[in-house]
Length: 249
Image (cartoon, rainbow, N blue to C red; front, side):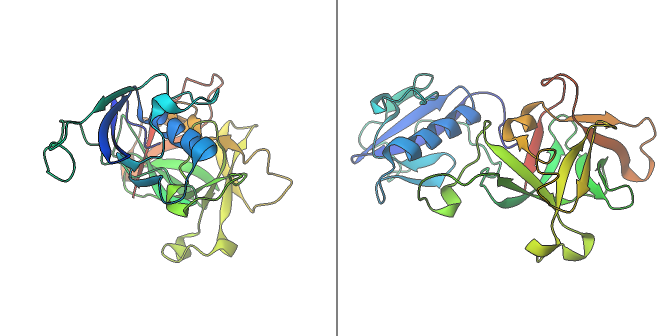
């Protein structure tokens, strides 16, 4: 998941003023973005230019919602006039180069602690394996659409979202034909991630929470990693016994 640990900074424009907002994590920032969309989304006034640059109709402290989990845990500092985006002189903030977690987009998935190890769809075994030489692009899609209008590029996934993970056959690497996609599901008997043709029957086994990329998926690594084969992905018995996974474009 594109949630690097540590403080995450966002520049916000509001009523002609500019602010630097510090969050305890990127996931907290994205949760607040959802709250802004849900409670006070104003077309033309609220826009997510990049993961770290937003135009907002309300600042975090002005949002009075029980669901605003990010508004009480962030620090807001106004940028003095003449030191903002238009001048090129900004308060220093560490940039994050990971892609935005946009709903319905395709990503490669790699281990945060072993960045050379990627999820790979093995069609022989029909399971998600780990490899240092092969990688599969996966489509991450929210199970239920959001109940309000928004630009597609501003539909950001957060940890509590129920999602489906889809893969595409090797012969569909570029087109990503919706009719060819296969869904990733949890195989209880072997505790690993397998794939199957999407259907209502396997929908429950194919539903995960987006936050599982923070530790809900594990990597079972093989001792012999010859030819790039590194093991397979699985769901551990305890929710936080896995590892963190990153998205790359």
